[in-house]
Length: 381
Ligand SMILES: Nc1nc2c(ncn2[C@@H]2O[C@H](COP(=O)(O)OP(=O)(O)OP(=O)(O)O)[C@@H](O)[C@H]2O)c(=O)[nH]1
Image 1 (spheres, rainbow, N blue to C red):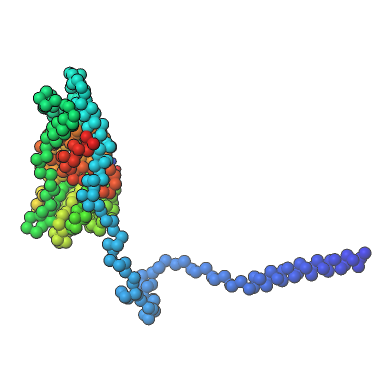
Image 2 (tube, rainbow, N blue to C red):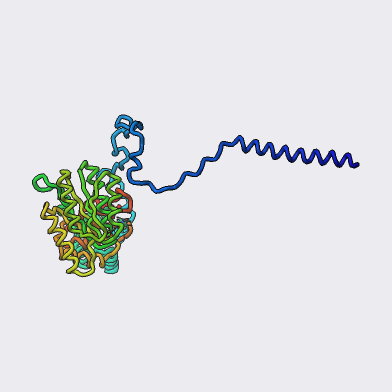
């Protein structure tokens, strides 16, 4: 028995020793851990310690994209393409206005109640009281004389609505600078109406027309506005001139125009903050921006951006802007988000300035030139 215990003990000791040895052997086979590098702060001149004969990259070694940086740029949609696509969106948002009017006007008996309903429909769509009364008066006369049989109701309504939107107004953007200088477009409006977005979208419209554009981020009030604008610009290869947050908008606007002149740009688009704190404050700010720009080049367009969803409030704000600066064109944004497209008629009447562009969505190419007949056709489709 003692002999058996002794044999087992010898075997156990031997086995354990073997395991220890083999594990030691495995450890010995592993590469020795490198000593942890000492973390020291880089010192001035460290890079000069690189051996002089270290191979360096030459221009020939570098793989350049086929057509330079432009290979990654967006290709904005042409103005023509936009109109076709956005017309359907306009019809969707404004359909109830046009179709509602058409249904009322096509009734067999157009009694007083029907006319009142027509009036209410127009006023609810923000057409405004005076233009509504004018339109109803004209419709009444024509219906009495011409009747509403067949397609007549639609024809009459279309003609009178087109006349109210005024197809005779010049809606082209003034984009020819004087004496070889870039055209300067100043974009003004209340915060949140879509100014920065409009400047970005407009840059794309112009790039699609092969125009050389420079952007000026003179909205120094909202910290992110310059970044937002720069991102819009970068997507289509357009430079943004910007300054420090809270900096002087007039000096940034001036720098942007100067840059535009240096680059022989076709158009300089300047985004502004236009805070509506007080009328004098606004007048001082926008007046100064315009005056300072005019030391370098003429301001060719002042576009006032109005949020179509704000109705009467938007109209009141627009009036204040028109009093402090000579507005040459209106941009109605967010028409996709409201059925109150009648604001087009009201705001043009109120300010005596044509709507030149309409925003119909948050997409990069959702800005289109405004056209009276297209607009009315979209209402009635
Ligand atoms: N649905 C819709 N949204 C729009 C349109 N235009 C602008 N927006 C949105 O409106 C919001 C405000 O737009 P901004 O361009 O930042 O407005 P802003 O006037 O520059 O504002 P501030 O920089 O604060 O002065 C953003 O979310 C835009 O995407 C449009 O036509 N349709």
